[in-house]
Length: 282
Ligand SMILES: [Zn+2]
Image (tube, rainbow, N blue to C red):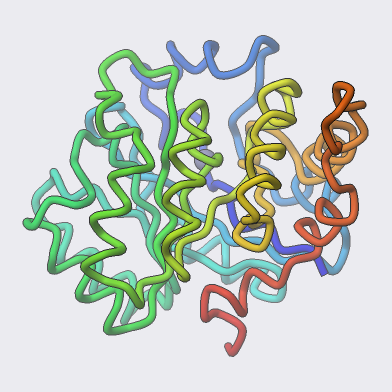
């Protein structure tokens, strides 16, 4: 069964401010409507698939989806959706939002956007976040990789920042989004050395050469089992992401190299991410 570990809830223009939308055109060459519609999502995903959904909070980048909206969306489709809260620890009140998201809203993980919000996830000031998440078994999905937003500091985009977190909180389930693009090699170095750190392959299929190269690196380092399927809807869809992965897997490899293992790509698409993230019961 397919699990999409990376889907968003956005409402335009309520959650995405003008500062975000004005720059979103850099995300994809073609224009993408970022308003989330369940019918559209469901029509482009297998009928029995499950999705982790979150909004996002990053005041610096003019993005703010309140957790109540996510909880309400999940409640409407509770047989298919698992909700994560989002936290921006540069803003006052994030610790209250964390406890409320977990205890009152029933959200089961945390989405962080360090670069978009402007913080280092390994900063010791965030120890209360990692301690709470570890103590309560809340997986954290963290944006890694570049962006289209000018004011977002790239130094907080690097997958290596998760290494410090994982060394100090080794039981914490972590997902590094987008295989850290274009720092895929660095992302692979991190997921390889920590047994509970994974990467998702969301939002990569529209750069086929880069995804092919990244999957070749994954294969050579032997970390196929650390990749989780994700779409990044509404930037793309589940069906397009699956088709894109399969297309990239069929790219013929240069002479002397083994190609991308299509069986591993199928295993990735079918991987039971919920068990790996400790979310399979409930
Ligand atoms: Zn995303």
